[in-house]
Length: 337
Image (cartoon, rainbow, N blue to C red):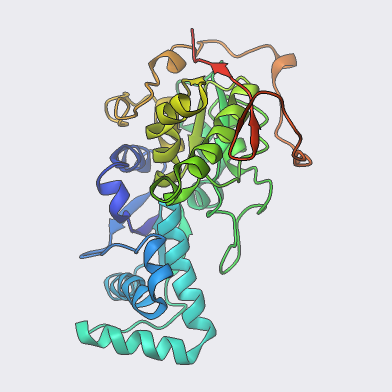
């Protein structure tokens, strides 16, 4: 199966482990990714807040390049980064919904000798391709070293399953595709009700108190469920929860030590790939202690749980340190053997 591939800026830099692990699992699954030539930044979240037309044109250039490069080969462009996935699919959706807007974007693209007809490219997230095109059974067939004993909190973030331009691939409030994929690898998936809550995005550059509180909630929820790791599919989510975890500890007086990994890294481990090939060691919070919990034998059947839809928890007052209008407890949570 051949797909166009848009890595985006993050997978070239801070999220290179995501790119490495994606390439490592591609061949075993029969996937071929062809990178868009001369791609440019999608603008992330900032450019949209400044001026819409230049932002759409910047993104539209990538769609036009993909349409030209893959003409007659494939109409699918995969974006592992959640922000890139959202921006590319949103631009295609907006252009398809407004002939006037599409005309303005194409007028801008003409300066580079490009043109894009909306609907030509189908933008899909990497998780969507793996669970729906490859399928859980095909993934299970490649598992040689199951992740028995590893407790995982699956974190989708807020951009992949909603708003779902062009049709979503999972439930927008309580998705389960990543849960099922991790169980296919032999891992134990814990209850993680905040799985689609926001990590704060670039709020760390705007308001640290707000950003740290958003990150703290996610870490606490994972620790309350005794997760060994949080698994994500977004470079921004991974960066915020990993890089700023120590800042959160200092700010709130907590002691979180939760590794934040990409789902493709854990797939690679289960496929028998080495940690070096999968980019382990690049995370700020080391995953060594968590990976040491992986056992050679499956847990008793009575301990296994199937993911199920649950009602989201309602906010409630909690005792402890008062911060920014929230009542925050002092929590100690470490990943230990």
